[in-house]
Image 1 (cartoon, rainbow, N blue to C red):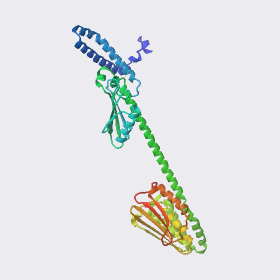
Image 2: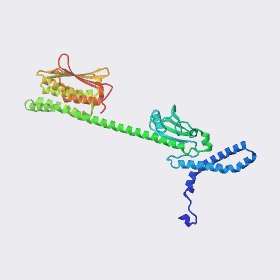
Image 3: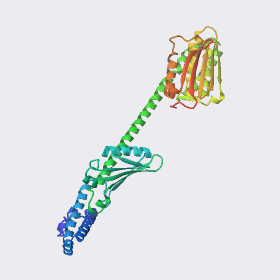
Image 4: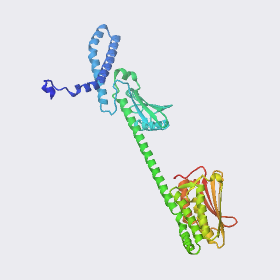
Length: 421
């Protein structure tokens, strides 16, 4: 409106300063192609014609060369104006850089897959950190026009440190002399780079999603394992409390001193249990303290029918074991061994090293195993916890001893700790 008020017609959009700035490289490209054709035609005329024809050609060829140059510039402009990436019309070919968070080997593997998906199975020449191939319109160079439209595609990999590389994509015409002087590639190199870039980015995105999904699955499995460990451990501790409290109640009226001693031991045992209740693993020395407090309570309840010993190599005290793992074996020895015999019985706990395994044996001189006996819920839960924490690395065996009684043997790798803490 202001231009009309001033008496000047509005400037067309294609004549704006910004548009003219974008069109200047295409104008230079048209002039370059036109000059190359004018020089070629003039040289051929001077070589094969006389002086008169040469003078006539000097006047006729500039308009023809200008038309060829304008056609080349328009062809290049139309082919590249809708591309998402910026294309330099004066450059011979096209280049693009992609930064990826992968090691060079993985980057090359993704590049090969992207090339095969974009251009088919082509002959590829791989050198150290680079992949080179020829791309033609129909795959094979069977026709002469295809040779003029064949490009050299290169994917270079630059290593920038741990899991960080740069992919340098480059595409240049095979016949550089033709496209450097007499014609344009019509955005062909840029289009091939754009196609390859999209294929690479699509694979990187798919790999990232796969990695994130795997990480989420691992996190869910870890949380599930932790929840299972908490549920399994919750079933272990309280089952002996009922008998202990019933015995304590009976002692309050008849033997106050014994009741006080038992109550003190029970409080100490519960204090130790509450301290490690939130952990899936504890040191062997802490576990043996709980086992000793437990056996002390049972010995009071059974009126000296129970004798127990605990032996452990001092060097093994700091090794991690599943919480309540040895306690379960001691509980099992009392429930299925000592409580089933009339006279006194013995529970012996020993810990030693055998090669790269921590071996924990809990022996009792109770009755032999029944044919259908599996040790009850406590041992089933312990086996499940060992599976969740160590996989196949830990073993639990219950067997009759050669003389009499039963042995529960727990083997845990010394080099591995429980997965969830």
